Image 1: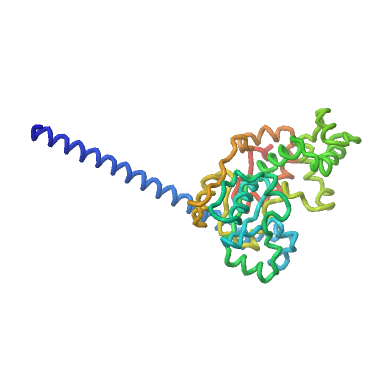
Image 2: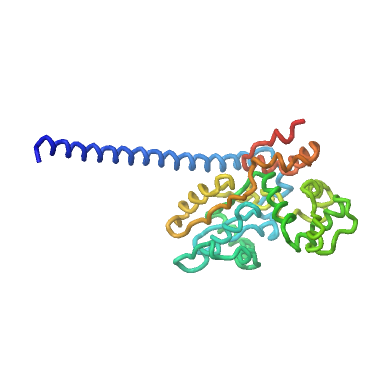
Length: 323
């Protein structure tokens, strides 16, 4: 082999290595910037909560200004993993089934099983997860001070649509008996709704989305009992002014946020958060859902959920509220 050819081969090899190193450098810088953006977003979310809680938002606190003002029932959405020092406030219709799967897996022995191997029905059974309120008050406060506390939130109106789809468009006898029959009777002009969900589906009878909104807006609903957790305001479930959360995830950036949280917990090599489903209710479809809801009722609904929009940084849906 001639010296000239050997030189060309060496130069080619060096050039290839240089390109590989350059590509790796650009990838590494890009990854650093991505991680930094995610970190900054998390800090902005927590800063917004601090500003909201320090401001003049007394109405959203409903007279509960101290942790001592919260009853055990107020704390029922907080579950704890003492092994890893984690407290999770679950919000229905915000990936809570999968986060409960993760919490249940973490409470079992290593190596951790795949969270998706656990039935969704199982994680929602009573006493499968340890509630924070099962501890004495002094112990609760110590855990809230020292454990890593997190929650995941979602666009409030999109969450309502998801709740409606799940509880009133699918076969669910419990929600039919306890909610849908009353909604049909009071707002659907059906004085004698079918006795069972099976009969209602056979008649293609279910509350409309607007009927559901009418139910939420009726003052009688809240006077009778607090909102059911699937449509209770998120800040009323997790009390962000009385509990200082270390991590605030969003459904809209679920996989990214889940990866970051598991990294913070030093669990990223031990457990993988389940993938999202493609058929999740999207923000883009919101306009179609609200076509049947009169403008005045949309505005009333925003006032009802205004705290969630403001606490968690969701834009006021002007396209739904402008005349």
